Image 1 (cartoon, rainbow, N blue to C red):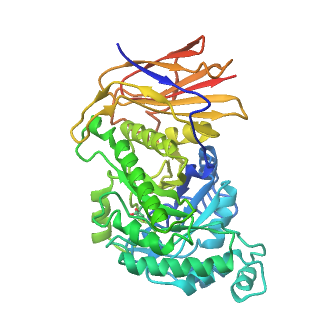
Image 2 (cartoon, rainbow, N blue to C red):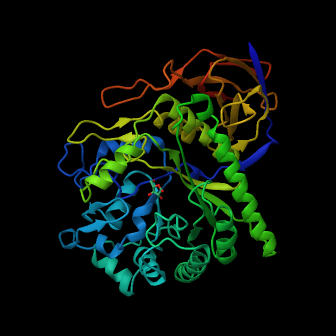
Image 3 (cartoon, rainbow, N blue to C red):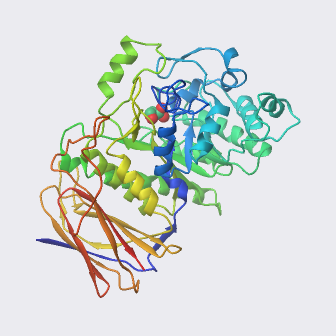
Length: 503
Ligand code: AHR
């Protein structure tokens, strides 16, 4: 049998992870808001029309922050339409997704929902079709206590206490030609700089995210970051990253290597931030907010047809990817990659949360919410990947795939929760044909014993969950043992593994 080994030590510290790395995203898109979090009249909904079962599933994911209200949606969002008496709110053509926006749910309702789900809001502002004044007005509406035009407007809408939203995204994917109000790097850099300056005058306690590239393949990457950050560097706290992955070539081995692409992307953005830092002789180090990441490809064709041929519907079923077992492996791998960079990736958002490329699904017309395959690696990593993240020193066989060279069989990261005295080894065997014996040296952690070895595995890479039942769920397996500080584990081919030790 093939062998691999890992050495871990308390000294191999990457970072104390910011819990906001387990963030997510809800956009006014498809059935995320209407029919997702909000279904008035459904017996499963509360007095405000929010689905209680959905809130329960989101709470189990332990999502500390949720980006809102978009996404591409935000670039033509008129926030004033979404507040005040619901019956007076206008219906609008929603241009990003060619849908009809009723504005029944707006900033105040969403903030209430987020509180119920145990999450903070990360607010994105419209820097596509709008600008500095609108951003300032929205910030005043949300965060200023009282005694001004917009704070008093909020109070007149029945919201006495300010929302105190701490994280604000300066637009969305402004480098993308598909974005309404898409800008050149110079145009965006200047606008974002001036908006950031004004917003920090209103509330110096907020954190701001400058728009990075929409993905690694953008022709303007990484010049976009270099140029825009020259303008925004001194005023912002993060640069955003977005990337989606998919198995379009239907090649599982190659698909499991996409986390290497995420790793390359993160390293490149870190280098670019540090280039700007050096150029500016700045003492400040900029962090990364990977605020859109996930698998997204299953629904592409259906979405194109729906938007082109059946536009202007309320809550059309857009971006409803049904995820497979291999997608769950990829989500587990992407989370390992984010954690390996948790010294610089301080925030990240699984995009998205409900119905739209989501771990949680609701059914049209009734029935309980259900969990997609990707729900599980996210849930378990979010639950146990807290505390100090440690860099494992890994010896592993490698393999080549169609598009990737030297792909490590074992991908891994370690979380040490000092408070709970727990050590969690996250490990994926990316070799789809061969099992591995993994030996982990934990002699630096005296007295830690095996608590459980949990796997996600399936003989069918395309196995999917549905409202009718779950084909992919985590299982406890007797595949690890600990002797004299050495953990020996069997990693079956193409499996996500979580080996937990406790003192
Ligand atoms: O998450 C779906 C879309 O992907 C978002 O609206 C956009 O920001 C990205 O292109």
